Length: 111
Image (cartoon, rainbow, N blue to C red; front, side):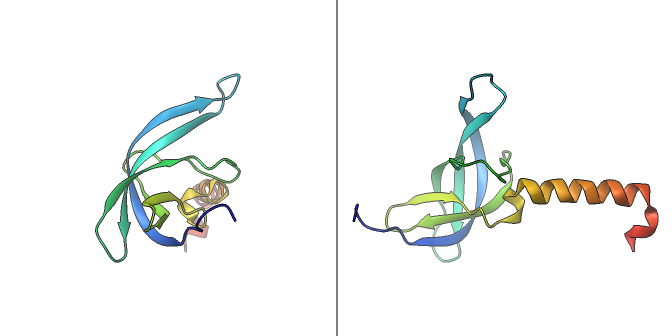
């Protein structure tokens, strides 16, 4: 194969900073690089640079200060976003907003 396979472990990460990595041709889509403090379940926290996933489908770009799910490989020190985290799902975000509007319009749905 092409080198050693990574063993990804789940952790949480706090976005410390982000910077624009690029835009599409008309500037409508922005991609970011993120400085994230990774907090493994076992072991010391460390900092890593994460990039937006190549395929931004159903990915909600986190803001600075947000704590989100990440995955890391202890051997290499690499980290990436955990796309199974609902906080990083644009679809889940949209559903929550639509539900909030429905509840605001019909207070009987609060119970």
